[in-house]
Image 1 (tube, rainbow, N blue to C red):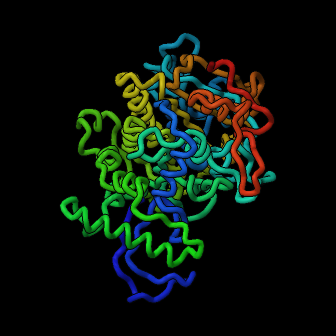
Image 2: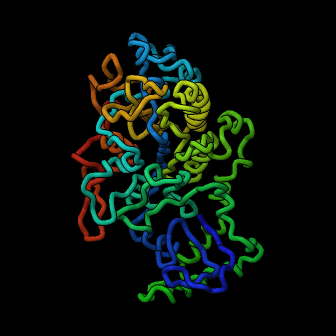
Image 3: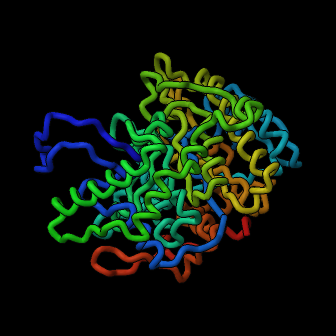
Length: 454
C-alpha cells in the first residue's frame, strides 16, 4: 500500500528508535528498506521482460471439501457420500456437484486435478503459495512465495504497476496468512491490497495540483531514510526517483482497483458476498468482486495476483454444519469463478492468464459426528483455467471413497512448475539466489510441468 500517515505522538520514538513522523509506506517495506526508486533501478539493471502473461492464484482458506465439490462419490455409503448429487457437464464424462450449475455449463474451460498429493496436515498457507512444505529445510530468510519469485525473475511488465499484487486479507492468526518474500528480501514483497485498497493508494492531504509538494515530500523522505540508514545509500532525485513519482501519480493502478470504473453489468455478473468477515471467518471474507479486481490488475500489467477467498474449515458443530455452509458458499463461488473465466475468454486473455484455485489439503471421506469433514492431507483437488492450457479434462482420480489417489498423483511442485511454464519461465534452468549467494531452483525435486496441461 502507499500511505502518508498523520503526525503522531509529537516525535516520540518507535520501539526501533525511529521517530514517529509523516512517512511514506510502500508495500511492506519498513523505514530502513529500499525506496521505490531503488527497486526500479534494480529492475532496470536486471532487465524487464515484455511478456503479458500472468497468473491469478486463488487460495480457498482452510481446505475445501474435494469430495463435495468436484469428486463426488454417489455410490459410497451415506456417511461418505453426503447429500449432494453429481450433475453432468458440457464435457462428456465429467460430473461435478449440483451446486455448481454455471461451471457445469462451461466445464470445457476448466481443468480439474482430483489427485493432488503431498499436502501437509495442518493449516498453513505456505504450501499453496510456495509449493514447499512449511516444516522442511529452508534457506536463510525462508522460501519466497510464487509472486515474489516471478517479480524477481521477470520484473515489472509496466513500471506503473507492481509485478506482484496481493489481495489477501490479513488473518487474526498466523497459519492462514500469506507468506512473504522469504530469502529474496523485502524488495520482492507483494504490493498489498487490503481493505479499501484504493484509499491506501491515496497520499492523504496531497492532491494532483500540489505535485510539487509531493516531490518535496519524497525528497524529504529520502533525507529521512539517509538519517536512519547509516550506509547513506539513498539516492537523490534521479531518473528512478522520477519514475517512482510516475508510479505514485499514475492513475493506472488506482483505476484497476476502482470497480466504479467497471461496467455495472460485469460487476453484477461476478456477484456479491460478505462485505466484512463473519465472526467465525478469520480466514477471509467471501468477496467475489476480488476476482474481478484481480482480472483488472492483470489487465493493467500485474504478473501475479493472489486472492484468499472465504473460509472452508468446516468441522461441523453449531453454525458450522458442512452441508449448510456448502449450500451457502458453493453457489457464490460458482458465480464468481465462472464470471472470471468467462471474462478472460471474452477479453481474449485466456491464452495469457492462468487461474489456479486450491486449498491446503482435502477433507476426510467420513463425515464426522459433528456434521463436518476434518483435515485430510492424503489427497486434495485443484481447479485450473486459462493460460493456453488444454481444458475440459480431469487429471487423476481417487478411490471409491475419495480418500486416496489411485491414478496419476500430482504434486504441489508440479502445479507450480506448470504456472512458471505458462509465464515463460524454465524451471529446469532458472534459479534465484539467497542472501548467502547460493542458487536455488524454483521447485523441489526436479518437478516438471504437468504434461496433460502442456
